[in-house]
Each structure stands twice: as C-alpha cells, then as structure tokens.
Length: 327
Image (cartoon, rainbow, N blue to C red; front, side, top):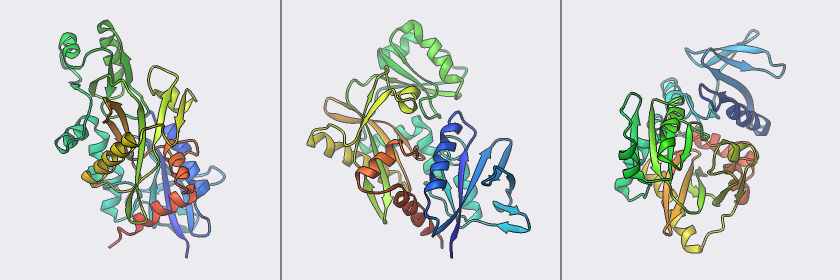
C-alpha cells in the first residue's frame, strides 16, 4: 500500500521561495509506485495542501491532516523541505514529534542548535573543531568598533546568527563600514556573529544517514565570482561548484573526518551540509545546514550524483530512514 507523504515547503523566512523550489523537486521526484506525495505550504498566515489545480485545502493542525472532499487524509511521513524557520530551527520537528509523525530531518534539539550559529560553534569547540575568531552582538548592545576589529581583524564577516542562504551577511573591509553591515544583519535576526576572514579554499561537505550508516558524500569546492559565497553566488550562477573538490589527499581526508565527526557529535539524522574553509591546511567549520537545498542544481544533490545516488534514491532513503523511527 502506498504511503502518504507530506512535503512541507515555504516557511516564515526570506528563504521561502528557495524552499518552494526544493519542495516541488521532491514532489516531482518521489517514486509514484511507493508514495502519494502532497504539497503542503507552510506560511505564517496559512498551512494548506495545494493540489494539481492549485486548489488549497487547510491543514487541521490538531493532527496535521487534511479533508479533501469527503476524505480525511493523514500522513505516514513528513518530508521536510523548509529552509529557515520553522522547518530548520526545531519548531516543526517538535510539532511532529508530539504528533508521533516521522519526519526526514534531524530531531528538534539538533535543528535548534545548528540553526543558531553561535551556539553550534560553541558546542563543537571542545571537541577540537576549528572555527574562525568571532565576536557576538545582540540587538541593543553598544557597538564598539575598535573592540570588534581588535578581536576579529579586517576584513571580517558580519552575519545574522539565525538565517540562511547568506541573507544578512556582509563582508566588511573597512571599520567605517561595520555599522551598516551590522544594521543589515539585524534586519534578519536580533543576534549577530562577526567572524574573522579565513583566506583559503572553501568547501561544502554533505553528510547523510544512508542505509543506516553515516555517509560523507563527495566534497564540493566553492569558487565565487563575488567577494564571497553570497545569495547571487548560490542561486544566480555567480559561482563555480566543483565536485569533487580540487583538494590534496591530506585535505580531503581531514575535512571528511571533521565533517563526519561534527555529524556524529551532534547526533544528527537526515541530511546535512557543512561549510568549511581551509586555513594553514586545516579545515575550519563555518556552519551546518540541516535542510540544505534540494533542487537538481543544489550542492547536496550534486554530491549525491557524484556518489552514484540518484535524486529518487536520495529522497526514498530519507523517508525509509525516517520510518525506522516509528516505535
């Protein structure tokens, strides 16, 4: 009997358009002989099922079900394709855990922790994971530009602490430009992180649970045409994404070990994509994404393809792994 799969997409953040694209790719790719997929749009003002004619049917939030005509539809599993809040920060994970509905992403605590760049890096440092020098600010704090430059140097990166797709991120070359970058970051979040610039090769490493085992996918090298791997570079073709990355054997081994270590230390499940920059030959962790892009052009699917894992297999495995969590 085919299983009903709710593909949640959209979300409350600036990433909602990218999420809709990811979710639709999942919808089009799932094996129709095994699954009946449903597109579920999650927005602040509505949670709805959207059918083939773009008719909308409201979600009953009491049990995450829908009524289509005279039929009530419940779901065997939720495929999470929401980038940003509430799909990547723990809220949806907690909701589905309460309803005992399996979902393809990590657990609530891991989602919340990894979505908070500052907290995640702080948890990983005692395990020997190398990171950039950082300076934290909360909305309302006094901005001491001299203290910031003294700690992280120039150039530096100013980032919204809880945001993705490079929203709220600026590269700052001069002290006079710090305040404007801080203002931009605070438009996305009330916490920011300011990090030292790491001058080296940037790579993205996908780690997933595949057939019950932690699997590190082929590594992607990021070469941005812009000043850094910003929104344009990620989504508008202003970058090269080279898989497999042009790394030495030693570099490849080091970053593979570190990415797997991060995944396992955090007790991750499902998809993840971690970003590293090599400094003095050592990989330094920038951040981890737990609901990475899932379009055909996205980095994780590229890496899966290089590992001879098709999109259909990648998505099918995610659902099968989620269903294992049922008591």
